[in-house]
View 1 (cartoon, rainbow, N blue to C red):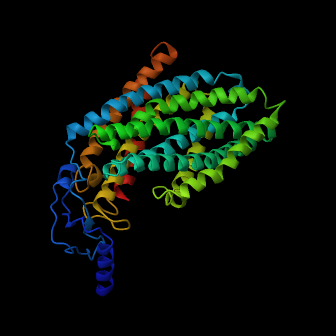
View 2: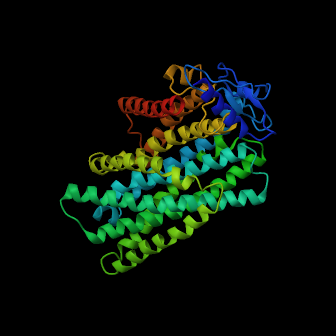
View 3: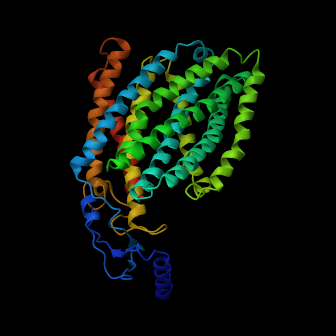
Length: 435
């Protein structure tokens, strides 16, 4: 068994470029500053921890790792975060307005479609931002040629995932609506599918270009793209998606009874584009692995958020202002968690080899370790939690006042609203840090 472990280590070491030092990091490195101050030791001096089976061998290029101070992280996250908050307020108000449009009143399945569609857009764009931010932090965005390859490949990945997932989520909305109402309408199904896939691909394409620009600019300005890219895109993402969905759905609704064949052509056209995008992905070294490994988390998140759509569809008539808070409570927490997940992803790529967990983190950890000591980015977690609580209460009151022209939020509502947002954020945060 010892010989097998030695062979595994030597095999891992042999794959490391000669220019990359082999270092042994301490279990006590829990802050960004400590991760950046680790010094290299003699090549090949790694070992395997016999109890936890965590390799202490890590390939780290010290010139790539840039330690961050807490105040720097706070400033970089705070500005785009509050811009994103304004965007989510705008999304909630927009949804509150369009819920009275004819298409949303006549085809209530669109309310089932909204949460998973917004979640799909957020998931795909977050994954793209995380991938490109990690590449930037690894120093791979110094060449215009490489930036172009990453851009084209990642846009192709998002388009493929958006087409497939949007059609699936529209089928889910149609199925759930038919089960609840006891009848199936083919024209409504075509309307939902065409509107869903058109909205998903269009909004993702627009936001992907914005995020790529933000990542490149922030990298050139020596800021961490992990802290900035996702919140900046989120500041306009939900508003763009809801506005596009409303406009596209209204346009398709006007023809879905008389010229339904146009909706069929739209769906078929997007399906015919799939081989083109897949061909681009397969010929791109940066995105080829994503075509195989990137489906399960996207589809799982889509399935979960689909049930959120059922909840929204059932309560939209009971509590009129519910739709105003839906993008806020989901968007704000999701933005901050995506910042943390992107930072953790970058840390793993910088400090270890694929398949090997670095020693300064753990396979499973308690909430205490994830938030206070024992794990990297615990300090960042506390910063983000503070932002989440402060931002949620401000955005809650502002959105309510703008929508209703008066303050209708009670103390009890505010308390339970904050409690839910905190539990939502902590659950996602502990999962990211602990497993």
